[in-house]
Image (cartoon, rainbow, N blue to C red; front, side, top):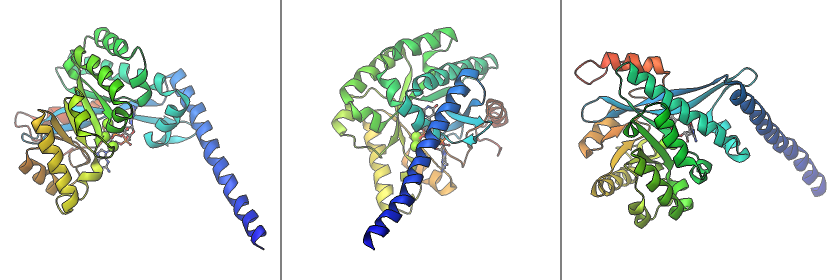
Length: 286
Ligand code: C2E
Ligand code: MG
Ligand code: MG
Ligand code: MG
């Protein structure tokens, strides 16, 4: 009887596993096609807002993919596949080039927003990454300070020595650097001091329940204190409610990003939002 049960359980489990692999293969095939044809992949841009003034000063470029067969595919589904198959290098190169093209387009319209681009772990290990970034800045006439590169805390800590070296070279180009999803990895504070980043982005996991959750509130306060002693700016991620923003303002957090202000938007909507900001900073609701 036990044997039968065991076999039955096995029979249920195996197809599910197979389906997950099949899904990854399909996602990989379709993504490769999207990159080859240039169809279906776009960047949307989520505003980063100065807490004190309410002004949008930067945006984070976030990949959006619509596939004819798969429909809308979330980054959480295709980015890990791209990372596992190496396609992330091609995808990352496309994102970098497209973000720089967009900075140039906005500059042409008198809009000087800084654009933050996410780097994957493999890009960080790519030998010609620094060259690629420099090339894109030149090609599109982008002032280096208008580009920001985001690296997650866990990526940086996977090989801190190497991260320090690459980030140092990128910083030398004049681009801004952010440590993304901060709080979810295991940073040693000693290494944090060694990383030449300009911004720390506190993961939205820690912002979700503030100010009510005492443990999360303590952590965010500690990150702010630490960042400020190192002259780094803090970006609070995932701000959805007015009470979170009030609390962050009282603590002197520099920037926030979240649905309270806006979700990731197509470029034209970012322009419209900027135009609606007027002289007073505080944006009209979109
Ligand atoms: P991330 O870099 O931490 O990006 C922030 C994520 O939080 C985005 O999800 C954004 O839409 C979401 N978010 C922003 N504000 C709020 C909020 O108020 N509430 C909630 N619940 N969520 C909010 P998204 O766009 O699904 O991207 C997920 C992850 O996929 C990103 O996390 C990043 O790690 C990765 N990703 C996206 N685009 C790229 C890319 O171009 N290259 C690489 N390497 N990774 C990317
Ligand atoms: Mg990010
Ligand atoms: Mg993040
Ligand atoms: Mg995150």
